[in-house]
Image 1: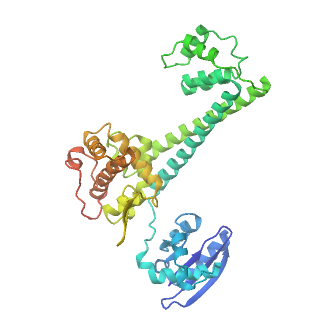
Image 2 (image 1 turned 90 degrees about the vertical axis):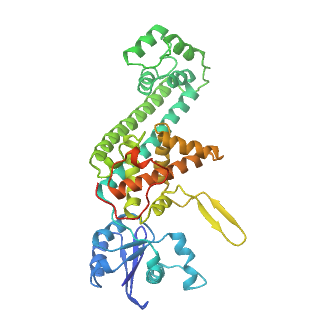
Image 3 (image 1 turned 180 degrees about the vertical axis):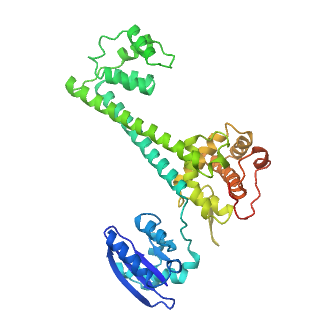
Amino acid sequence: MYIGWDWATETHDVTVMDNSGARVDRWELAHSEEGLARTLARLRRHGDPADMPVAIETSRGLVVDRLLAAGHPVVPVHPNAFHAMRARWGASKAKTDAGDSFKLADYLRSDGHLLPRLEPTDQTTLDLQALTRQRADHIEARIAAVNQLAALLDAHWPGGKAVFASLDSDIALDFLDRCPTPAAAAKLTAGRLQAWCRRRGYSGKKPGSELIERLRSAPAAASRLSEQAVTQLVRVQVQLVRAIRTTIRELDKAIEAAVATHPYAPLLASMPRIGTVNLAQILGELGPILERAQTCEQFIAETGVVPVTRASGKSHAVTFRHATNRRARLAITLFADNSRHGSNWAAKIYTDARARKKRHPHAVRILARAWLRVIWACWRDGTCYDPTIHQTNSKTRNTDSAPQPA
């Protein structure tokens, strides 16, 4: 049996097809607990879930999780690829929910052997992936909030912006909370400002005289807002930045605890210049790819650090790979760029690439490709990273033997 699941936000359409291509069953269900439960029970009446793969136009979400939990093999079909196949069932490329579920089932029946299936990812890897992705979102929110604060100061108090840019983050926020307007900072002197910074553990080398000079020499803003309004705006924005910084620190603690219990963490923890957060990103984003990849080259390709070749009788082009897991590529290239400052082996690969006239991003991807072979070897053999073993040359043994437990 083959199942086509036309996925939507509020309703879904399901078609069950047999080996001959005949429609055995078809129904529509609501996106509710009752609808999903009845659908899974109805599917079980047609056979063992393990023998009934499901084609669906997504690789994640509630429906995919419920299908995997029920034991169905899930075959994700990219919407663009499915759209390109519509001409198989008619030149008009007509689209209806019932028709799409039938076409998905038929596509799975005829081409399912060529399509990859989702594999359930280890729970600890999923936890790390969720934590690191939320941390990345909060980092973006913090950058946006700080930029908004800087724009607010630039419009209403340029002197405060100059001091804010000179101090440590926590001290700068305390300063703006205490002196949110020019009038609030009018009585400050170099000595008082320096003593105040010293009490808060200011680590910079700028004396109070320089800080006060930046405060006084900045141009005066022609703001038409009242001092009370500016005070409220600045303090509210400071509270927002502080709140986001607090959530990031809480996520960092959760990530550190999750990394400590991850089964793959000891394999990669000793790699050069890999911090806890970057290690968590690599485990969370590369872990699912590692678990489903059949070869080292497939692993490297899905991570997105190899180019795409497009060749025909008239043309030949090697281009950047856009269709890939971007978060995984960002995690491994960030590590690769840092590793060249702590590993002579990595530095040589990078400098050799630069000597061949490769741009910095390209050279980093070349180095990342070498590190991915090392990661594959560590995971496959169940051995912790050891530079004397994994850096004897730029290529590790790439036999596709089964991975060993860590």
